[in-house]
Image 1 (cartoon, helix red, strand yellow):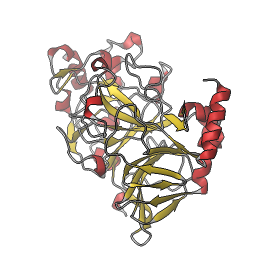
Image 2 (cartoon, rainbow, N blue to C red):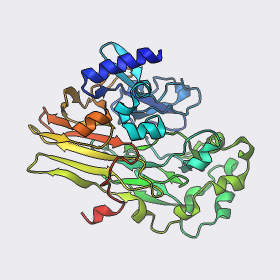
Image 3 (cartoon, helix red, strand yellow):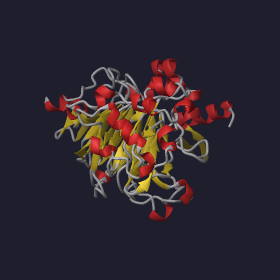
Image 4 (tube, rainbow, N blue to C red):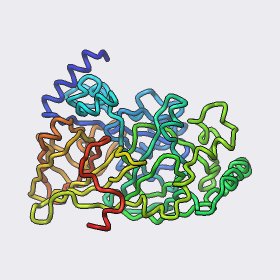
Length: 410
């Protein structure tokens, strides 16, 4: 699609939706994981992209970041705007109307939407892994990947096989201990989880996960605002009896270091991995931002805090009660997914589906342009149950963002 054509289509969609764009589902498979079946995708479509690609266990939201999957088409992971009979990527829309879409400051700084969010949904745990820092990823021309978690109650009606997540390494663990695990890679389970501790996952809570910190996410459906990157390194050689290829440890490592065990160990942020107060420094619970019972809505911070001193992303959960409305003003653009109920967002009608076929359009996801977000958006519940949506923001969006631990003060 030409730039001029994309710009014209995006302009028409922005005008028609008054700054609110409807997005199609962006499904992503992972060959090394088993889907948990809670993303409302028909079970017969979990392997719609072919068994060789793996099961579909992720849905990406307002994404301009491509998935780094072997054998994937170049647009895997990218969100598409749908208006009338036209489809075009959110990436192209932002490239055409950047200051209006994401705000002058964000556009001038990044020239793109630098974040995304997703649901991941697995039957069991993910291998103990890390995401490279910006400095490490830049060696390959890539972006680093700090991330965050929130476990939406609406999708976690069952915990599946292992609703626990290992974080970091036990205090007292040495670099030599981790190196020995890498030396044992081809001898079955390399035992790296013996060096870590798992936290029990609780729906309605979350975590902030800095880059270079090992973590083995458990089997709750997770809403995951993060930096716009798909880099990672798997440090666990087997998970639930399935082999993890060495390639998944070194896929985002310079080639000359693919078998340099010391380099692989040094990739880890040692201070953060062995932090004896990891939970205190990274655990999140919702904090009411605005609203209340009398107002008929609650807008709650669900992802907040800073990663290495920087506000990189944040997220809110808005609940509007039946028959009520809430006008929400935000200082920046956001991607939004409806997780319960039905209603209107501005003039756009939305609802949370119970059942989705692969390739089918839904009415549960939108992108709200920065200019419209600042003006304010009215959310109206038109159904008989709470109308609940999750929305995430880019870097430096909020002057009043809470810090990790502030839920204890609320």
